[in-house]
Image 1: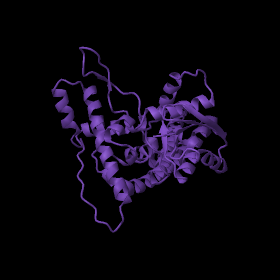
Image 2 (image 1 turned 60 degrees about the vertical axis):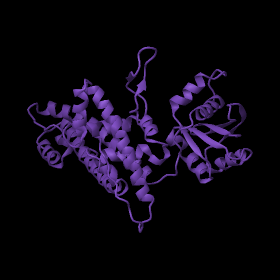
Image 3 (image 1 turned 135 degrees about the horizontal axis):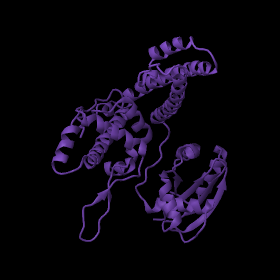
Length: 357
């Protein structure tokens, strides 16, 4: 097989392409711009190697347009995590750091790791990710605003009682705005402006949640059927996964989610593993929240946790195993939902039963 991989080191103003054969030898390199016309030049340059595939460092916002143009041209595109590219560069015989060196390292990582996730054209999952990310930004901004507002309120009236998480509710915000009308001075003025801004942020956040709820219920009914998985957790999983069918198996998906344990044993000591701190931490956090909800009695997670702790596992170890098990459940649910979306509307759907843990 004369497989050729085109490694790409992507930047905002330019992309550097390096072609490598199946044993990692550099064949050629080319530097292009970042417009669709420049991407067409890359396609024409790649025509000398029929069947070549592209390997891009996983920087979605920088490589989004390039991915879309290459996929539209019919090329296979794989995403190389940054840490794999960095490891390939450190192990290279050519020392230093430059765009061609980085592009060749991306190609080497793609050759060494045959099961990397492949890129897909943008679809509904992309919209869910954009909405979920924007909501997270607004929630972070509201939290910082509330923290500053509470200090101003303490200065105005130390005895003023605001319920915990109360400034997320319209009734509390409106009541506070009315009470602030009785204060004068710059601090009171800033507090009133912050209260108005807090109300606006809450309105935007609630509107984004409604949009997410509509999309997630349409795209992932099987995922929402997993006990403990709410709309916001499902939105994070859908957006970050970007298509479960691009993973070859549930084990590959577990490595992506950071729930697959890392073996650490040698010689007479065997079977030891440690926590995987890699993978997608957003999905890992969503799986942890599902696991916490199940351990409180919603779903089979509590029974599974009790069984493991009864065998001598600590609660931390049991939670890690539960997250690994939930990763498989989520993967199956995503596959079912994606097949249902791809299935014609008039085709009969097969009933599916999901085990939550």
